Image 1: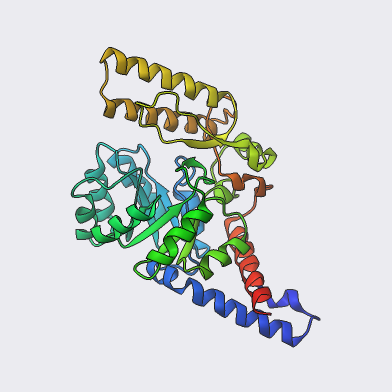
Image 2: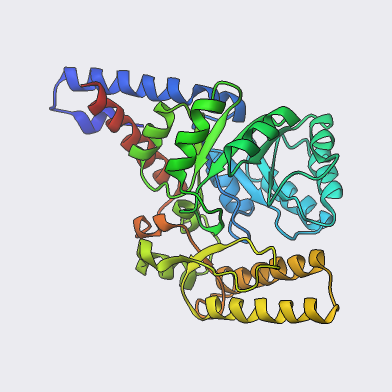
Length: 356
């Protein structure tokens, strides 16, 4: 939020306006903060290998809402990660689960045992029984809606909140931009349930805009990937600092039979390796060695391994540098609390200008 000390010498009127604007920002975020149980309705995107206990706890401790990226974790690993996060923060945080995970229901049980308050389902439509399993355990359920028709279907199914994420985001992406999704979905759905907007958000001015359109809050990933508290390898962070928006490109699907969701990442040798992996899996399909479900799982395992090589090992040539187009706004390593404070300052100032 805006620090009154920074306004010294600029007059009582400016201080009064900024205080009123902060009140407006707080009011616009109220639905999101109440739903999440945090101070600032800024969720952290679930970035595999990056959104682990240290970053998640730091975001929650700073007033935002951290989300553990379960990814391909086993139930035992998720159990340890949740316990590790709880040891670092007493503030609310969530867990992101992938719908295609073969042990999804066991992972849901792990979240229930730890009394995780919010579960995020990503990667496709929730499988039969998963919505009921999550809600019966007392958790609030958040799902991704890449289209208005799906948003309506998920709302009818009983989900508690939605995330609409545009193609500007890093990692797995859909074909539609955030701005278009927001215009289509917020007017229709924001009155029914909390809707969080994601994809390409790097500054607070945009956050203010989406809040004014009816969003309950926002989700950012790329902006937090290089935070001081992020365990990402220094090489990974340096690659982000050097990159511009146009360096974050979407992967290409080479075989229409493969249910490959495009991935946005910084272009490197790993990008070319994914093309080769698709050909390999397509050949396995041709030979009957794998079925479609196994083919998709192999693709997901490829990304998990490639991302780990970049994030943990620092292999920025052969690994996957998943990043959103907002990567050009990531220019230095800074604490999570500073990032959130800056975003809120920018949002508050934008609202001040619009009300002047």
